[in-house]
Image (cartoon, rainbow, N blue to C red; front, side, top):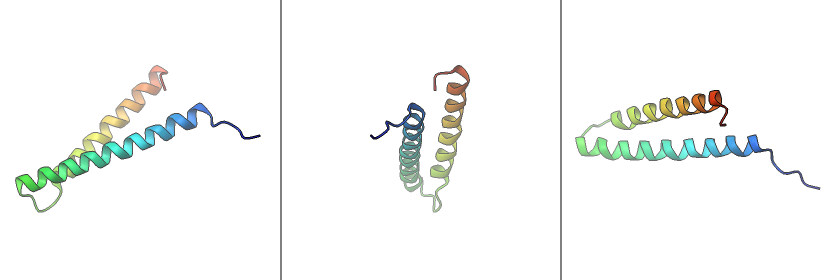
Length: 69
């Protein structure tokens, strides 16, 4: 008999995938903005990734404190 994965495993793996996708999109969009503004280093891409990480961790903490996660 195979066991079904627990709900927590599915939730957290979904959160990890969501974080990866959002960070990738943020860095990609930021690198395009860096090209538009003519920066030779990924300033906007890095800043956007940091903002996304802070927002994502805030969302996770708020969800766990409210009991939704």
